Length: 255
Image 1 (cartoon, rainbow, N blue to C red):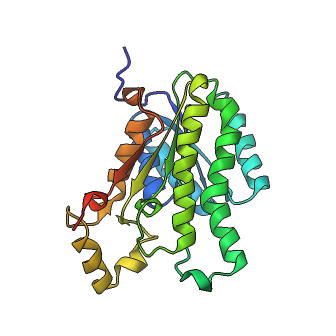
Image 2: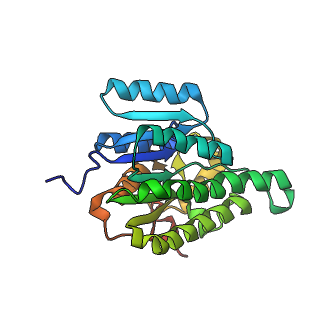
């Protein structure tokens, strides 16, 4: 009997799968026996990752497309459908940010952040729905942020997009439960990735971050990946509509 603590044979689509948290998620899934399909903008990065994984004997596919436009999202699922008949897991990991004060954002920046962080996840869920319905263990995991519920100096638009993503998670978990599709989210605090590296280089800011983190350290991408993998496993089959904080105790800290 297959262990409920594995992802053997599961087919997982992971956005932003060549760097940072997305890369760690993809590799965690592969190590647990899944077959993955990664999406990222850079053709060279996609091919680099696929080549390395194929040397390990892992089953992996990928396409170099951004998720920000409707045309690209449709093209992504055309590619996925050419490889798989069904989909077991969708991980909406792509995200970006522009850190500014509220009055300094342009209309284009507002639209770009919401399209990338929120609209893409909403539409990827909708496009994945027909393939997820064909799975008997379908799961969506959205990568949110502690900024969805805390003011963390990320800028209002990023925080708004992640708050909306968490409500989307709850809504779809209820609406799609009858289709046996589970929907959950994870909410990381500062994780060591290429996206956070420039911010954490500021020694004073890093000191302030650590002072608000009971674990007294920055998280690692692998720690997020393990939580995402758990939420995709049969072991978590009765968990849906939840957002798991991966924050070293940040969200629990009071005075």
